[in-house]
Amino acid sequence: MTLRRYYQEYKSEFIFGILLLAAVVASYYFSQFIPTQLYLNVISPFQRTALLVICGIGAWSLMKHSEGLRLRRVSAYALIAWTVLLVINMVFEIINYGEPDDPENFLSPSNWEFVLGDVLGWLLMVYLTEALRPGWLNFWRACVQLVPVLIVGTVDAFLPNVDLRWLLAAYPFVLLAMIGSYVRDYHKYIEDNYGSMENIDVQWIVRYIIMLVIAGGSLCFLFYAKYTTRLFTQQWFLFFMILYSTDQIVFRPNPWVEEENETKPDAVPAMEPSPESVSANAAQKDDAPASDSSSYAGALERWMQTEKPYLNKDFRLTDLQRILPLNRTYLSQLINSAFGCTFYQYVTNYRIEEAKRLMREQPELKIQEIADRCGFSSPTVFGRVFARETGMTPTEWSAQFPS
Image 1 (spheres, rainbow, N blue to C red):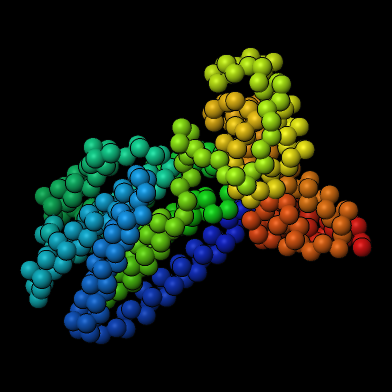
Image 2: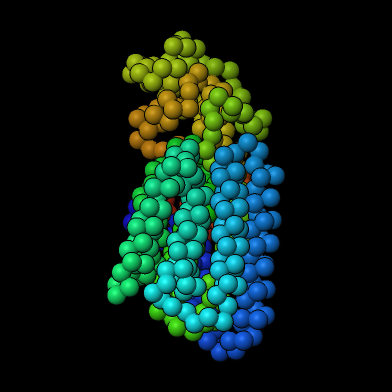
């Protein structure tokens, strides 16, 4: 995927990141002019209290709406852990209130900011890790990820002439790079299982990574900024990120399907199994003969052309089990090998061809109506996908067939 295609695919996410970064930079600049005593006595306590409240509400919401999803439970545990750490940090600040900050004391407020920032960075990446690699993260692996923080912190505490806080500030980027390496596999999984990626976690994952990058950069800036009110920006940004993230995690669908519990939406038209699909029930195995694969591909093509199930916006890979007695893994392999593309691309090709047919035969139709008839989730998505696949916008293409 070229850089231009990345931009077209994630244009709204890039705009989101630019606007959010601009807000953070502007906030850091104007926070310098906040009176220190006003910040310490009024603004900061209010921000901390609001952060505690939103963490508590977020954890409660995730647990209440977990619906058996490990993803949401793990995210709730992360918020609970962050709440505990925030309380500990507030206790340290109360104990050290009025005392001069001593960089050589590892538990001084300024040093504790970096330790807390690293732990928070890890906690915020819990969702990302679980979303990209379900079930991989456990207690011991989580502890291993935090070992470098303990090592660097210990060395920094016992070597007062060596300042390693910049390593602590940069460590969240290391974790993010490790986790980010799985994004491509995740994207491939989504394309192999869904006919539409709208409202699936692909775009949300990109926004979440952008927020993590900005949070990491903000933490690094705290290392260089010397004014006390610099924390004003970090605290409201964390408030926004946790609030926004909790909302997305609770209300966005879980993209990882469980084959044995899969239910088929009634909106997808059913079809009697073809003779080819019935002839080899043994094809549940992944090593089905090539002849079976060819017959399955033929049956699938006939179904797609006659019944047009792709017109359903929620069409997904497991709906193919209505006509093919195959498990999800083999269905994905069948699409990849027989048609040389992912399921998403396969469905998109049919939708684009259907849109072209409508524009040729019924040029009076509006773009919004065409998008709806062809199974696209919105005219915006239709326009973006059509332009990517044909090199022309729907309006430019339909202009060839005046009404």
